[in-house]
Length: 525
Image (cartoon, rainbow, N blue to C red; front, side):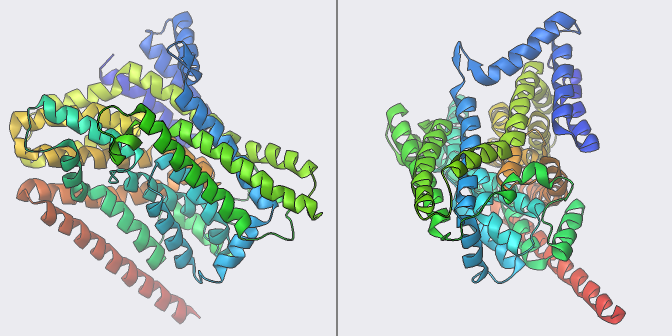
């Protein structure tokens, strides 16, 4: 279609999600609307299009869609691993061990953020595992699951998008190389351009800074305040009405001889095995020079996650048998753990399938190409191009649910616009696209990383979406100021300074507000 009409189905799905709080229903409506728009409202053809969308989740080019299938299986494996670890008492033991070292709610949140920054190799792995590792500690410190999911989501993609040795970094470097060659830019290599773009990715620094400010200041706003207030006052880290649907492992039997190693060994095995498989897989697939970045760029991260998950489950079962031998658990508990663990991941599992289906249909609609064309044809002052590209990239990623798709659509457009206006803007334009795409991905309820962050944190998906959006919008506003300064001054570091100044002003404001609130509470007492 490639017209304004292509915006209606994705916007309809997103608005329905936010209004009804029923994710699958809303995605289903968006899928149906997209198919009818594509096939000009012919019923039979539209139904066939819906079938193709769902079939495409599992079948691609006449064979199995290994990327999607492996990721779905990994989601189930992680749920099973988490349930078995919980039953062995590893989760409880880790929580008890960390609670002695992490003394405050702020410390629990900081720990989660640091874990999110350290595990930068892949955003899917980050989103799914950091929440599971941090959950026992944040639960004990009465940090809501919505806050946990926010921290996980706001450290996974932002870190991956600036890490050269990551699945994201390799993908982006590949696109940059193609765009630079197409525009005959010889002053930058693909890797060199990527490295220079890192300090210009203002949304990354704004989002990460916001995570630490929120953790330290204890200043909540928007829907997050409701979840955090309930968690602090009652200890209920989840909405009681939704707890049974997203935290089924809380009712599992727990061994009395659980040790910290019952959690650390399975998670470490999962991480190490995944990285090894990514290296082996990538080395077999890489074309050209076998650099570390190229190897990880060629790796099939989804397949590596599946193999890493299988190794992790095998090691977990070996540890589980020790508890059976000691009479603390029984062989029947293995079946219970497998069933309940897989069951706990079904909501995220189903949302992923529906999200992938609607992303396929949105791609057929040409929503992203239409928006990119609007930018390409607009006559705008070069100074404002970076901030405009940031906003457009955010909207494309929000509407399509994929930051990678936004990268693929807009990075070539950014290169073309820079070449036609001012070639010196090519790197700032690249940075704005990358930053805006991550911002839109953070806000989109149909984004796979948003879904996996809520799944990995055992948080109801719509709770995660509605609580994260205000923080993401604030971070984006600060980043937008940075891009305006960058466009006017042409200086990367002045733009970055503007971002840090805005973050500092926000921190001062939160402290002032908190002191006023505390003073008011003291007077009231």
